[in-house]
Length: 400
Ligand SMILES: *Cc1c(COP(=O)(O)O)cnc(C)c1O
Image (cartoon, rainbow, N blue to C red; front, side, top):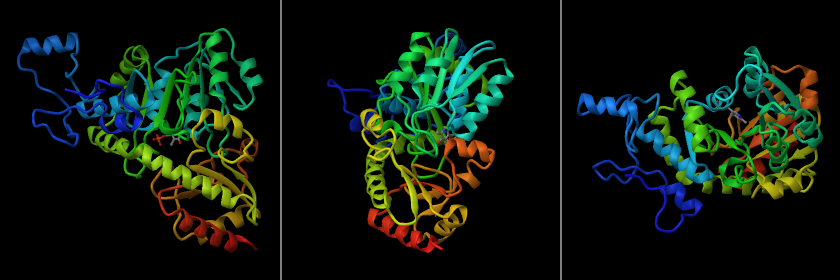
């Protein structure tokens, strides 16, 4: 038995707590972890029947599906407003499967250039190896999308807010251009989160998350999810994933499922804190740039405000004095930790040029605005005043 909605439609908070819940014969309150790889059949005939067609509460093998994983998929689908979802072992397994499951040699893909490094690897190195042609555009320039999308383009791919410079892409406008030639719009929505943006409502066809980020939100497990129409998830994504082995583990699904109960509260608190911190940082001595979609000074602030309920939980800022000053700032922080996750309850800061984007050439980094003084801050759940005090003291320590 499972809950999806009651007699009246549920609002997001209610869906976050109840959607997808399946209870065993024991009637447990908290969702059970079905830590099992397989499932028994009462008879040989029942086994045969299950391989012909799966019923609602029937499973065969955890690589294909599992009750705890199914609960997570149904809950996140209910939150995102998607017909269906497939959970994966990591965010990258989700990005890879969303693209590879639908593409074949000779297809054409258009993607934004400002991408998470591993996403860029899949588009630039993996897809092209199998005869898929990929064109890269400046995602904020609609005329480049217009020029690159052509009859025969099968998919467009972008991060709705790019990492680490927080460029915002016009989902509705890019979707219109893509749909005019019948291309599928696949959005990596990590930075916007399922809380702040109705990505499918804006026109996207497929939404992909690294659940490692805000969905877990507590830095414990790796995971990912692909959301879309039932047809796309069950007929395109599932056959690919069930035979290639990118499934989420039931234990991870249980962690993620329980995390969804508090995700909205966490993201809203983190976003409110991020806005206050961005406002405090803007104009602070020793900083040359503060990038946050929620600030009116952000180049796409109006688009961000139209597309998203809040500016998100990540801020980028540039320290005067380049890498040396940036490192002094990092080393002077007492609360904010140096690491490379984001969306976590703990505030985390990273120096992209020497870590996440180290593999790029200096020219590529310059083109993406990743200077030596740039830092990316993921705002956590600590007291906002404590975080501002930590940053203010570190900024003072960073000055020569
Ligand atoms: C982290 C991240 C990924 C990859 O997710 P993993 O769970 O680490 O595999 C993909 N895209 C974006 C935008 C990310 O931030």
